[in-house]
Image (cartoon, rainbow, N blue to C red; front, side, top):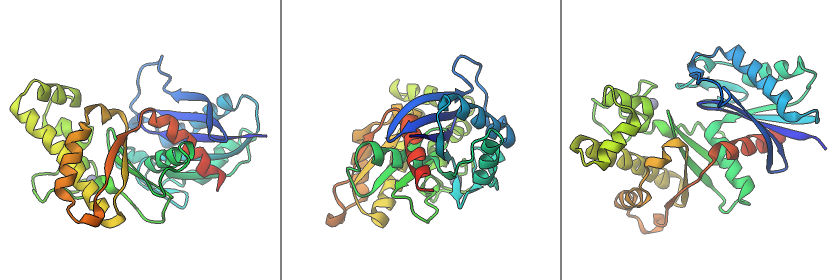
Length: 293
Ligand SMILES: [Zn+2]
């Protein structure tokens, strides 16, 4: 039996071989031993070529049956319609191009493309035996992703939920005013604090520096607000938190703010859970979704 291939583009490119719901060989670009490259600077064509090379590497001579690939942004019908954090991908017919790239290597396989956070949600559903009917994930990194499984037809760019009416809140990478990512995203934090990195801001908050303490409260309230909006639209339940910036999350504080924002009795009972190793889950989820393509 052959294998599925999961692909993920975030701060790195990841490609993994997946058999059933088990992740085998994985490659990263750039490799952790190499110097870091900002993927924003990598041409889309080069990105597809790296994915092809890594697919060959991880398949280790086994037959590849299908490919599922997760990309940040709005991904529909095989096209990356928007990708504020990897702008070079906007408008890319990624399934056609990746299928052609793989065909040049003799791999004639179906390719499915999906949102990267949706891939995490699918990976949680696949590996945890779908604990709930509905899986929702916030991805906290450079940008703020929102994943939902089962995959729907909608847009679900909940990272761009409006969480404040303050017209000065304009730090979102997409240019929209008042967005969740404009408070929580790494780029937004750097713009707000000029020269400080996100880790320095959270460290300053631990050292009780007023402005940083206020910001960390805002950071949590913003995520609670976007979650509360989601609860009012899609119902209560478990919200998974994934991505590098989950290290800054105070789950208790987040839950408290959410409780302040959701008061209808039938909408009670939501909670947050941090999932580690979300890139592994995303590779599994992407591959599992690829199987349905
Ligand atoms: Zn935005």
